[in-house]
Image (tube, rainbow, N blue to C red):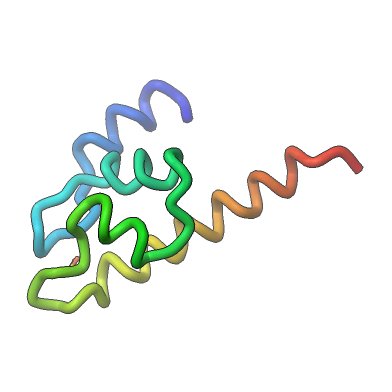
Length: 76
Ligand code: FES
């Protein structure tokens, strides 16, 4: 992650309902969380009025991006 991305992640919402910033979700993924449920347990996302519909989609996208970037790191 570039420094600007890190700053933006501290400002961008991760779970709007619970007021949790994106960087908390990214930290959970970096620490090994690999599913919405694990990330929710670590961060508290998904317990708001939308029941995780909005942040759940964001987490799915982030996990997919992370998985594809790991695949690119593998030797051919
Ligand atoms: S955005 Fe996370 S529970 Fe609604």
